[in-house]
Length: 337
Image (cartoon, rainbow, N blue to C red; front, side):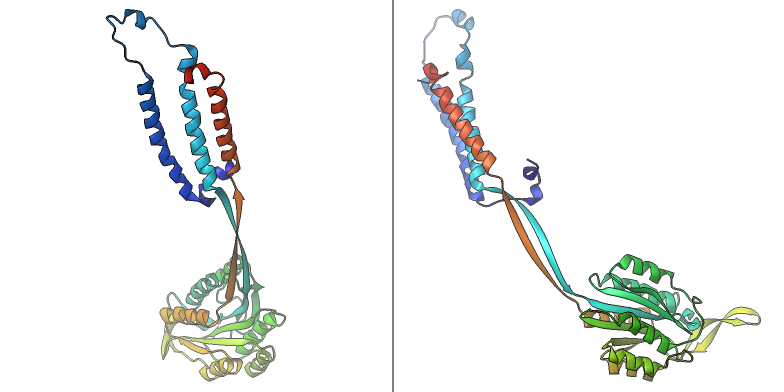
């Protein structure tokens, strides 16, 4: 009964048999016609004696035979239409990609050439990127003067997004260590069994410190077959940036210096691509381009299972027909004969 009430998963194998229900109006017309035809016509001078008479007990229940026949036809129509309860299961087979987002959190990332600043703009597009990769394992590495793993590669994107939201300037020693950021990201992917291993490295500066040279980190990435997409974030020329002065924190225009030759080299030698983001819209477009370049193949196989529900209706139809025949030739024999 529960399956019959679940209309969303209820189907009929042969709905054409519902056409039998069109016989019901004909059956009603025939019943009324037969009743009128069987009624004798009498000429009476008075109705006084008839008004006191009442129909016999059996005659009053004679319409039950017709009701049983109609119910039998309805049940038979449903049974022949073969109601079925369908249940669909899906088997999802995906060749996931393991991705590390390497994000520069140095002091220059609070420059306001992006709205509200570079680091907040970078976080916003990273969150959207994560939502577009539901079957991939993604991790987060931050770097400035040193590097730190905020989140190892994981399929639990809610945890990852919480970590991205907490990223801010000043979490680790200031400076720009591109080599450390790249090396730590490669280390996160060292034992990956994913179809592809990808790093998206974003920075707004020039490597000026760190224990690992960028070229050394590049060789490590190539050894582990990690593809690196690099993003230089910052407008052309100068950008407004809060700067600490003897008079306190003040906003000043500072030169934007990005080591584009290094970023291009890292991307080229690992099979990735270099992008330059000069504003919020271009940064968003870059992540969309990377999303298209690194497509995950997902195969979804659907299996539909059917449970037959016609049997109760077939039984009901047989019971109604049998009961009608039994009553017609026993209880109502003298009436219908």
